[in-house]
Length: 146
Image (cartoon, rainbow, N blue to C red):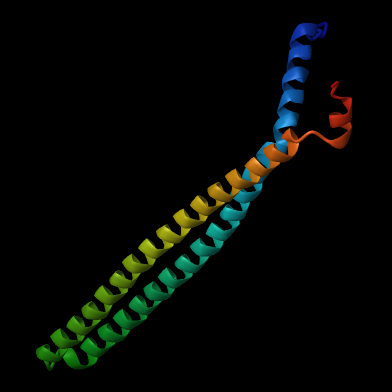
């Protein structure tokens, strides 16, 4: 089976488009850098949020086990004690859920702020790049006929 030769105009068109894209790299670089820095920062935020969430889940499990042991040891002879133990555990669980919610909203706000700042800074960087490329160099000034 003979290999098909690429269509010359299509190849030329591809390389022309590729050259145009390469010319845009100085304008796209600030966005890419700011985007990936924001990603890095958000991964750190996510790790912190997750670690705190898991710490609260571990606490919930540990205290639930302690409550169950307490009820097993003392609750059968004193139902009021069992109810008090469960109510205390539930109260602490609600506090943990409230902390989850507070941290979630803080986390979302910090992440949105990081992306917003990254976008703004990338736009400023792009404008600087455009301004640099728009200024004629000394040689270009000398080449302009008077």
